[in-house]
Image (tube, rainbow, N blue to C red; front, top):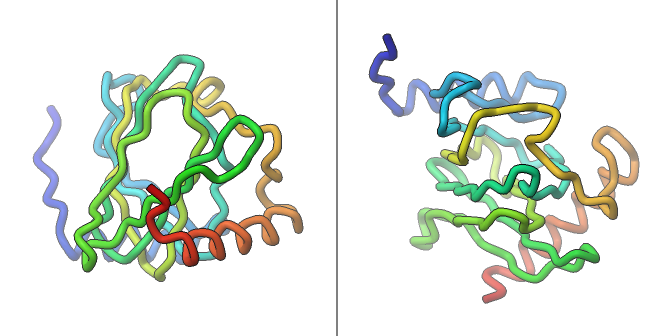
Length: 163
């Protein structure tokens, strides 16, 4: 039987500490089982963590993010890799989240240390088909990815909300 989980400072602190210690500088805390119809999780991300732009097309899945702690940005791309929207996620500005339709290229990044998002998308989680990575985006753990992340951060900080 599943149990009630309190989303509080203690849990956010624990998942953030695991993210800081992780080589990828991010960590999920799943509330779901992999086979569940809805994937619900905390996603703690540090500013130097690169999440390769991707979309959820095969199968199509909408995805939503709410910022619980810190500050972040969700960047939206067209098919060629041009940033078309910058969604600031900052509770101090009343910018709580973003809902992304299936098939839209996106990435999320932390602008402050210890940033935690609540993420939800349809399940089940199948690693082989969960993400369709953007062919124009560098692979993780490459020098190109480090430079690209810095460019994305520059765009996020300069662009604010591009709507």
